[in-house]
Amino acid sequence: MADTGRVMDIVILAVVIAVVVLGALGGLVVGSRRKKQLPPPPPTTPDLTAPPAEPHVGDEAETPKEEPRRTIEEVDLPGGSAPTAVEEPPVVEEPVEAPPIEIPEPTAGRLVRLRARLSRSQNALGKGLLTLLSREHLDEDTWEEVEDTLLTADVGVQPTQELVERLRERVKVLGTRTPQELRALLRDELLTLVGTDFDRTVRTEPDGRKPGIVMVVGVNGTGKTTTTGKLARVLVADGNSVVLGAADTFRAAAADQLQTWGERVGAHTVRGPEGGDPASVAFDAVKEGKEIGADVVLIDTAGRLHTKTGLMDELGKVKRVVEKHAPLDEVLLVLDATTGQNGLVQARVFAEVVDITGIVLTKLDGTAKGGIVVAVQRELGVPVKLVGLGEGADDLAPFEPEAFVDALIGE
Image (cartoon, rainbow, N blue to C red):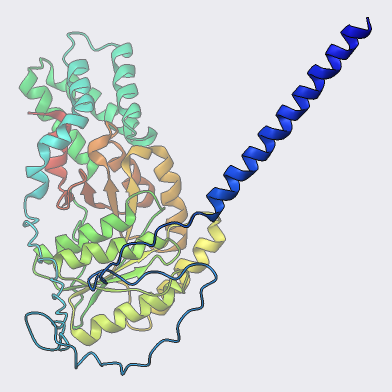
């Protein structure tokens, strides 16, 4: 056991000696490497084309050399001399061309030319009556159907009763009834009902003075402003010079709309601020019409039918102010034919406010109730003077009873 322990001590001692020797040898190798110097770098020539080296972090920047600066005039630009100021060409505003003035078509015979359009919507009345009167036996039921046809067409109760009574008497006397005889009979009676003895001329040429003054009234939505513009075309087509007064100041688009109509035919439009005094605009329009020697002044008024009192005050004031220049020659009431009996209610209100002298029926081509012509004339005791038969600029025509009745009963 003692020998074994001695052997182990010898082994351990040998290992320790080996470690110490190896450590010493390593230190000698490292030290020799540190002492060995690196060879100097090979000499180089400076590269004049290379950019100067950028300074490293921590290097001090050299003080910049002060060099004289050259102005832009001293710098030679490639391909030319120093720049000169470039003058921009003057802006030339192109003149705004006024729209060409239109020449409206003549009004003479205009309703006759539009008869086909009118007859398409009105034939129901005439053909219905002719069919009933052509029956072999005209009993009480048939005559009641005749009455119903006339009432449906808005002829009105009293005019219907008068027409039926006259038809019964004439058919009884006539005896046999051919289609031609019935058509002639019905045409005569309808003409009597519509009336051929009214003066349907739009009065725009007062004796001894100018201009003629026409005021256009009616509820908004009936086509009042459009009708005023179309009436200006009718007057211009007949050789008159026209001034338009945009006295409907409560509807923003009314003055613009009227002015557009006027520009198309060369009529001057007098307008005021939105929401301004309508009477003031009407006064200025008549004043300007007198100054320039116009033939006619057309005044478009507001059509707010909120309260009869407000409407009466407003239109009454316009009338009084205008008549400081001259009396009104014409007061035209615009009614929408498609409203039927409701139009009669409007007509009564306006008739109480101002003295209506004539009626304009618009949208007559859009209804089969042509009897409103008869009813409104009976209600107001004034004639229908103009009728509107479409959206076209020249679809306003002087009312001609014969042409209207022929359109009712067809060819």
